[in-house]
Length: 183
Image (cartoon, rainbow, N blue to C red; front, side, top):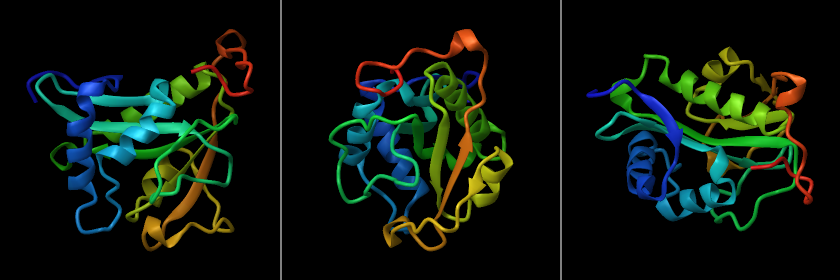
């Protein structure tokens, strides 16, 4: 690493590196969505998508979008529009394999949680894949084994959620006219 890792908003120019990180992380698992699908998810909620900037390259990313509780994106279809909901779904979080074990995944998740609180989201959800239930449990997510996850998410995929901590009464933003928290 040439620079200290910095979390920043995902920019259009980042998509090729995001797609490469995703392909490397999910190689051989059947979970790779590809750049077009990832971009479609980022396009519906650009204010909740971030990268881990190392100065000369990206070391990770997190993509999240408003999605109804107990539901999740169809991996075989692009996103067309944001849902009106107080639930922010963390669709994907990837840290470059060479950087794992340094707390950077937790840092990206923590940044997203702070943004969710500032934007008025009440809950966050995700589908834990690739045996990462323990990682998410350590960050306060609770498993919902009664919610069936499609097989496309891989074996042992598990829907999980958590409440977004309230950071203070002045930090909650009013909802937009469409009922969704402000981006």
